[in-house]
Image 1 (tube, helix red, strand yellow):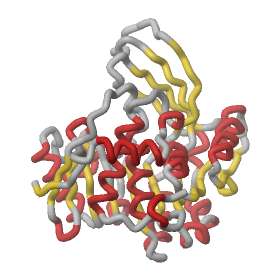
Image 2 (cartoon, helix red, strand yellow):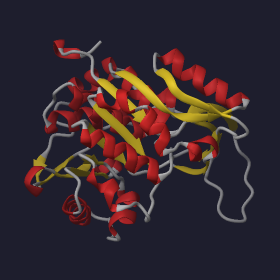
Image 3 (cartoon, one colour):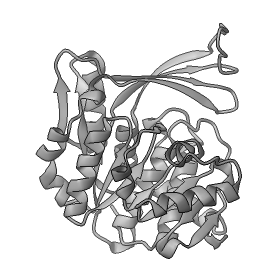
Image 4 (tube, one colour):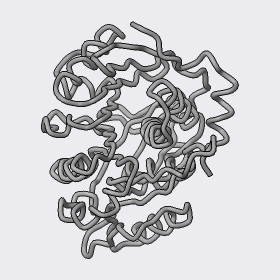
Amino acid sequence: MSSGGHRVPRVVVIGSINMDLVVRCASIARPGETISGQSLREIPGGKGANQAVAAVRLGAEVTMVGRVGDDAFGQTLRDGLLREGIDVSHVQITAGVSSGVAVIQVDDAGQNSIVVIPGANGQVTAEDVLASSSIIREADAVLLQFEIPLETVKAAIEIARQSGVRVIVDPAPARADAADSVLSADWLCPNETEAESLTGLVVGTELQACAAAKSLRQRGCGRSMITLGSRGIVLCGEGGVLKRADAFRIAAVDTTAAGDAFAAGLGVSLSRGAADAEAVRFACAAGALAATKSGAQPAMPYLQEVESLLRDQPEAAVLQPV
């Protein structure tokens, strides 16, 4: 499955599994406003599950650790992951709790607003992580996000780091209460809003993003990379060196899960042995492709698509000194 003759990377994703209720509308409703929507779709999502689907489509062996409710959504979500080829033996069905649900408005420009009801995702515990410790220790990379309790995220980071397993944290949704121990990840990949929450710094310009990336790295993570959408990324890497890269040129349709594809792409590429610059390009391509399609899991790109975009735009997402 993997390119370049490397063995298949093993990725463990610990995180949320949601059903996304996606409303398409001309513009996102403002407070107190009632608007007419164009359509409603039920689409499997959740940042954890999205990353798991992206990672398996990009050629990794993937195990998902998480929870669904004992409702109809729960069965549908678990079956969907299984169909993708993801190991769901560590996805528990939680009695008496609803599955996670996200209500998403997507406007004609492809921008979105999201309300998340955690449901069973809020029941993912440090004990669940401990029960999965053997697969974590055997992984090439562990992917984490903030749609499960922070204590659980911290427990997963601890087990992975004890075993020398690479940890990639996508600190989304934004949380100002993210404990410093979460910042001990090998890679921390916030967007502008999440970087502001973690650092307390304004992240409007590229220069401000560089300052925030540097601040995050100084607080303990191995590498901090802030995604700036169509403006590309900034990276504070080894030795605190700052670099930047432009984005791939795409026509955005729905940016809902672009960050999830990005994190998965980074994890898979690094697990194949790619150097930072190559892995960043691969991640940027995966994220860009996800934004060209509607929905969360259905938009996750396949390896051939990413490789094609990398060939078609060789000058895009190349790391340069700031």
